[in-house]
Amino acid sequence: PARQLAQHIDETLLIDETLGQVTQGYSLSERHLRRLFVAAYGVEPKQYLTTRRLLFAKQLLQDTTIPITDVAFSAGFNTPGRLTINMRQAYGFTPERFRQEGAPTKTTGSVTLRADYRPPFDFETLLGILQARATPFERVEGGTYYRRVGGFEIGVSNLPEKNRLSIRIPVELSRQSHAIVRRVRALFDLDANPLVIQEALGADPLLAALIAKHPGQRVPGCWDRFELLLRVVIGQHISVAGATTLMRRLVEQIGGTPAAIAASSPEVIAALGLTTKRADTIWNLARLVEAGELNLDERNPQVFYEQFVAIPGIGPWTAEFLRMRVLRWPDAFPAGDLGLQKAMGLTEKKLGERANAWKPWRSYAAMWLWRSLK
Image 1 (cartoon, rainbow, N blue to C red):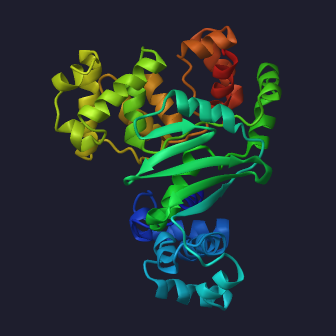
Image 2: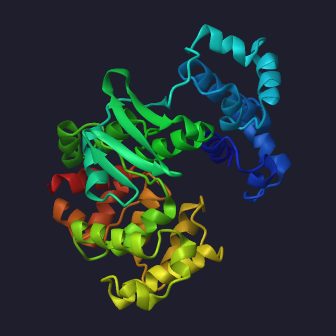
Image 3: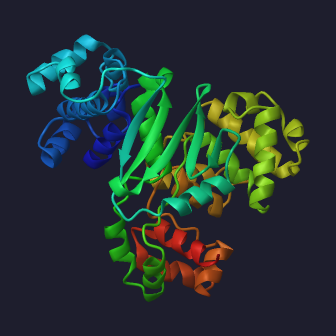
């Protein structure tokens, strides 16, 4: 629980929720969770949160020209005054002092953020996966991933010599800096430790050969959980290109939000070119999410899986794939996938048994096996 809480703080800075609200999601008292956290990290959750917020604020102050007011909001302090107080307490000087010693002060129409990663990193392969399955909100061009955010477009490109992704955002989105960096990190799986993963999986001779040929494999995450859920369900049993076309029709003619789709009907959705069963599933998923009966933010892998397989039209393969990409669980493995069975030359049962040796990194093993089919 302590590690999960720390990860949640790292990812969100609790900008849209309080520490008390988050701790209520654990089956432990707040006092006991606090004791576990102190034992693991040496500080209380509140201190850890403040430190993470300050570190992100420092990065923005030193690397960008984002106005200090927007830095405060983006880092979770809500007001420049609170940022100043916390920086003085922690470092002995003000945000203005950090900026004087670091970044230029001239603000232009865009800002460049950074997202560091551990090498090796096969950016090109990951970009190819995203390009082939692009939704109407994204595109890949000239080695850069582009994404529409709030009426604007951001661009993500690789700086391999610095082991870093460069994220170009319009200044109008500067208050969303942390949320954007967090989503980029999730989408490109930047928190992975590839050397640890490769060493563990390399104990299998077949995987060792694939790793040597294609090091730095990542598991793509998602920008928006409901968006990926739609894309995965639409893509069942049809080609990648066909799924991309249907996804575009759905978004353009109905909308891509749970509210828009739930307000439609299975018949209208089916008229776009989907089967009746698939249209029923999509409409039902949107209805459940909109009603709060399907929790896409569930963090427990087993609970996440079980809530999906209980929904008509969602089988074990889809639920497992969603665990891999939506939940970003490193140990998901859809043993029923025909491609994985073909790559290993094994039946589903034998493949599942072989894959037990790959825990807790089976999601990465699946990515290397799928790649071997190309």
